Image (cartoon, rainbow, N blue to C red; front, side, top):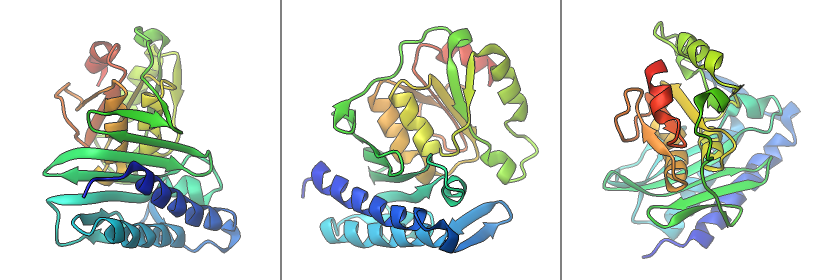
Length: 254
């Protein structure tokens, strides 16, 4: 059964409508903690349950891995879902959060979508076939100087209380670059690299469901996806994504 990008967009946008219902009623949002610095809300749970049911209805041959519900039996071909990437931002009424859905078959990402309902931006990519934002093709920036670059990062490492963290690395890179941003959602950050809004993104201690869709979106837009040593591939624990033109300049600072 072929994958229909239109069907997937409808499903993901409907999931976004569920999220927005909660987002518009934050005073009644139920928030709990999975760990001292890691939140989960009833919106996360509701969105993931909807996606799991809907994707299974349309494509029962694929397994499921969701941040909140865990892994199903079939993990060789699976949907990888973060129902709300940027839960803390969501819970505070900020706009930079997104629904991340990727399809992985035999360890290869073949489809990725990130929908930011509060911004009404829908990013989608298909392996080898391109990437689109709200139906229009996008590409990485043409910035070739790290000194003039805008970069984005995050601090999941601090949430995990890691002693080897991102603070010194951030300071090294911030001193050299022109602009630094911290949006609070790795999925959105990766889409912003794809869209040329920022020139590089890096972070430590993420999970595959945080970055699977966004990494494919960025790659299809022309980005490089490596680890902090420049090894090609998707490494959620130390991910570096650039427009390609500043990769060799930022690597020595990692």
